[in-house]
Image (cartoon, rainbow, N blue to C red; front, side):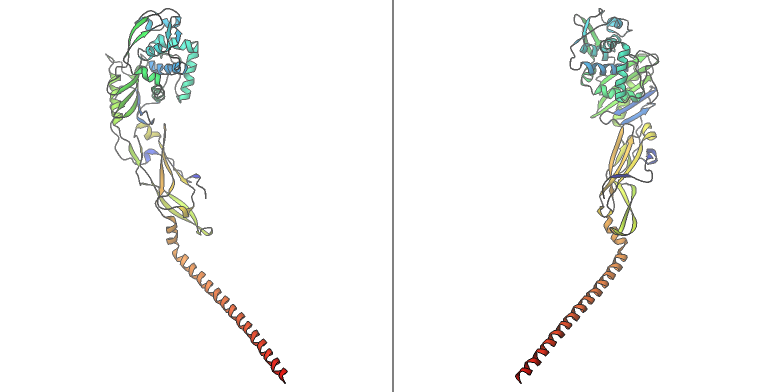
Length: 435
């Protein structure tokens, strides 16, 4: 038989929470943000979730998308110049124009300088300059942003501008921003710029001044990347990446309180990152644990005889683990897929299928192993029948053998009689000739 996968006839897609988990979920800190998520950047697995699908205003975290579009168009020509448009001068602070030095219409500034202004100072006029130079209009650039969002899988996001300034038609979710943050962090140019805490901005003709990163956590407690955001409607927002004990943890905290001194969103994010880096996965299926039973149909004499069914317990080759967060408890599923195998080829330890844990950001697969040497079990279960049949076949063989032997003997005797007859006639003929 082939080894094509077949689904079990009974449904083995079960809600994950129906399977008892081992290892208690570590406690996560209470945060002020209305919506938040933490995740393993390398694997994409969600560690902590809080209202991650609720629609939120992303404020200047939007500029990560602006940076991605800039990188797509200028990563190979970072030091090419763009013209500072009249529309950029109208943008509200923070802006290069208002907070550093006035910039003339059509003054030239390189793409790299704009990237620094965008990510560190969160300069709104830098975002608009990028938008108009690449998309010709803010609306045209927003179309590019929305196309990119679709490519990243950001299904609950819509961008109306490059700055993140409030617009009812400009929204996202913590989950979608997780996807955006991952893409931005993995972009070499964006990641390089976002690690800085200060930078001296220049145009082609003048030095504008020093821009200081709005991310107060940069360089602290493992924080290596971050983009802030704030509007009255959005509250305080922060999307950041931490490297702690060799783990790369992404964090998104939206609509946090606008406290005096603007510290809560930063302390909450650091606490979430530290707790997430220490979080251990819960074991949903342990190594060697029986997952299901495999029904193997066979014929007693391999290709002939009545069809019988043998129930074979199958176990997980390795442990299957997951993060026991709110989202996984609600959404994650278990899927068992068994292979179509020749029963007589299945021994103890034979791979007979897989068990998968399916969650929003992917799936984890573990092989399933047979616990039974099927050929031996079939022999034992049908031993009496095989013995009786064997004896019957032996008796038939012996009977046939006796028949054959008797036949051979009869033929020999008949032959001998014929020979004796010829000799007797020959002897008589000889004696008659003498007289």
